[in-house]
Image (tube, rainbow, N blue to C red; front, side):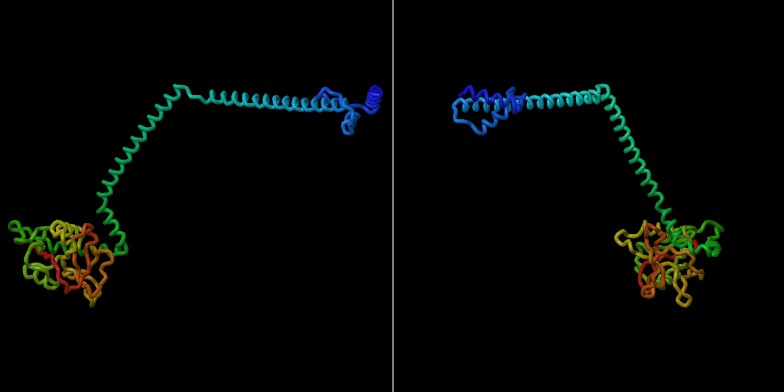
Length: 318
């Protein structure tokens, strides 16, 4: 019965066709699979099925191992190629010892050049600051001239008046040298009185003028830049530093009936050396005073004539 069953199966395999699985090297037929789905109760059939399943499992494991080895070999090949490429790049970019020394020398040269440039810059800054200091007075004069550029039309008349004033005040040196009395100083060929240390106290503008007239002179007329500069320099050198805002009357007034500032000799003020915002005529400030300010182009203020302060007298030498 068993031989007959085997013969029938072989014939059925030949008639129905079988598939060959190269991976397992095992011939698997549809009848076998059919028999596996519907196994008989024969003990030989059970043994044969167990052998077949064992071979199937071993074949699958072997195929997975082969695939894993192939993938690992490919990965190692890629890593090896990458390492070779990176090594070649490293060799190409590697700096020789001579190159390092040359770069170091160039860096030292650049550092020396940088230090020299810094030193030159500092020297130039010091020279510039020194020059700016020397140009301070020039800048003041430029600012002053810019502020009064609208007055240029009357400059010719101003110069004419200055010449006339100087001629009337020039001392005639005749029959020997002339000099200033005690307590007066000679400046610009004229005698001036500054009550720095005297016991005369402070006076109103009118009382100050009377004092000057009593001594043969009058309040000072400051009608030129040179006289302004000289006067302010004397104040800066002699005024008590603890009272830097001390003002000194001089011979300039604002006459309300005409609305103009005039000198005591009757001439109209052409160029004034007023501080910023002055004259502002607050509380009827009709008299002028000069102050010891470094920028002598801004040394004048208008002050109420009834205020008391020091003064400056002027007269010709004797």
